Length: 296
Image 1 (spheres, rainbow, N blue to C red):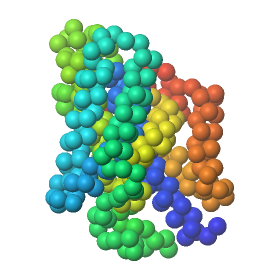
Image 2: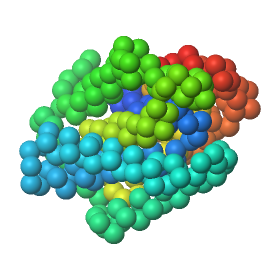
Image 3: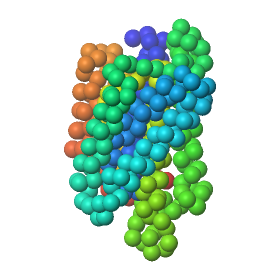
């Protein structure tokens, strides 16, 4: 393999890996606040892309993306309020099953609204034939939008959790909800906020990657699987680990495609997941419940 081709695979892996990392961060935000895995997270990414495409027909692209993020955040909050809050103190298994049901419901609503067609936003800068040279490799300008957006989201979350009162309250809720409630922290509202934040982050990612990966009503399921895998690999609750695991998984998948049929890409992902669950169940970058307190 030539150096140019290797660099091309590397950049492609980092691009897709950053998408996986954002989905995993969405999983971690909800997990830290509630202790459950929100399997509707992939659908939030899909909704962000689909709503952006529809809105871009009538308003400028930045406005369309902002509207999609806000609308999807509202859907995320609605999922928590309508499907989870009224349960009182349900078991973790029951809440996980409900999020799976929410995922199926959102997918079917998207199918009814947009049909089975594949859609995409226009490139933010340039077009499909525009490329940038980097050490002999040719890269789409949209790749830099994806990587830059992911880096900005991670930095913004770090600032939010470390530097704002609301972020401190969410960290307290993640550490011990009962103790936080006794200190006057509005736990229920923070749980709703965690769903809205996870949905908003997923929607922004879905819009930014839409010109490269395209989107459809069924795009959320595969992303949820990859995001869940990355969240496990990085250690549930550890968003820094999710970024590292996401980028690593993306690169591994990219180079695996160079030697294996493309159909085996998911096999590589699931093999890595099973291996880590057997060898280190808490993830590569975390250990048990400590993971929930180390990051954010």
